[in-house]
Structure formats: C-alpha cells, structure tokens
Length: 159
Image (tube, rainbow, N blue to C red):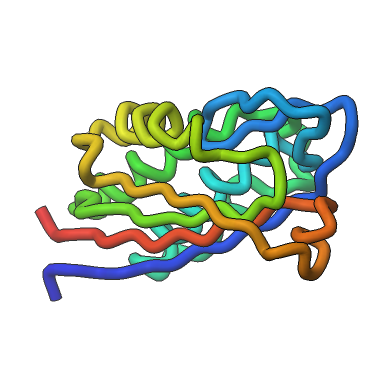
C-alpha cells in the first residue's frame, strides 16, 4: 500500500500564567494551555496523526509526560523528531488537515501564521497544511472556556 492515513486528537485545560501556543505560534490571550510540554494541542494532534498512520503508537510513547526531559518542551521540536521518524520509515507527508476547537480567542487572524509555521517545520508547501478553527457553541468544557482541543488527519505517501 502506497498511502496511509492517520488521525489525532488532543485536549488541554486553559489556565492563567501560561502561554497559549498553537501550531508553534504564541497567541495573545489571558490564559494558556496546561501541560508537561508547551501543551500545543494542535501540534500534538498532528504528531499523533502522523504516528497513527504508520501504527507507531502515540506521542506519549515517545515523549512521556512522566519524563522530566520533556518538561516545557517546544512541540515544534518534537514534531521535527516525529517527522524524521516518518521519513526514516520511507514515508513523506501528502497533506495535513486539522481543526482547533476553542471558544476563545478567535483564531482566524492567526491561521495563516500557524499554517506557515507548521509548513516550514515540516518542509511542506503551505497548500499541504490546512488548519481550521471552530467553537463548541458554548457547549461542554470547551464551550465553557475551560480548554482547547484539536483534531488532525494526516496522509502519508510512500517514497
């Protein structure tokens, strides 16, 4: 088989005194995501999609939250490691499609910067990385502004 598809999901709680990082971009906001690393839910979902496409487990296997070396880690650097692992297996990214679910802040003004950052990190043309944003219309913990989630799908093609 010359193509593989994987999906990923991540969610983190919003707290004060943390930076809000999405797709490697710091978004101005009064709260940020709580996590062992920089808690970049979008990049984490993308990494899980890439790993899942090749049945290589999830990011917790490679970067466990119990390991102090990953405390405060830049998720873009972790994404680079996952990307190199994918390439070492003889695969390339065909495209990535992701959705960030957040009640606030409004992400539309940041989508291009996020796409550009992820495209550069993965050495992909911008047209191969699609990021969308939506809300939960005030429903559940995300709708109540307690957290942010992201879903991602990745298509891998054999070299």
